[in-house]
Length: 150
Image (cartoon, rainbow, N blue to C red; front, side, top):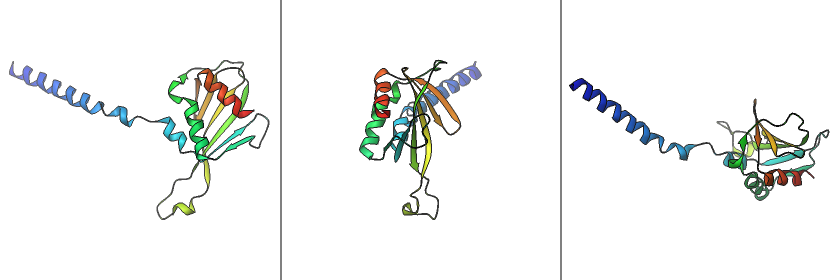
C-alpha cells in the first residue's frame, strides 16, 4: 500500500509540475505578425510579369499591411481546384548578421516568404522556405490584398 501511495503522489506531482510549466507556453508561441513585421520590403508581382507592380518599403505601410492580414483569423484549408492566381506578395528581410559583421555590412535583403492570392476567392497560399500552406482568409483580408494588387 505504501508503494502505491508513493507512486500516486509522484504521478500527481509530475502532472502538476508539467501543467505549471505549460502555462507560460502561450507567451512563447510563434507570432506570425511579429515575423512578417520584420520585413523590410514587400513586392507585389502580377502573373506573367517579372517586375514588381507595387513595392512597399515604408515601415508604417508594412505595419499596416501586417495588421490588415489578420493572420490569427486564417483557417487552414485547401483552395478550390479552379483557383486562378491574382498576385504574389514577396516578403524580404535583412540577412542575418553573422559573427564579425556589422549591421552596416548587412544591407542585402533576402526573400523569406511569399503569399499568393487568387481571383474571386478568399484563399491564399503561404510559402516559407520549402513549406507551402493554403488558408481561407476573411473576405476583408481578400479585398485588401486585391486592392493593393490593382
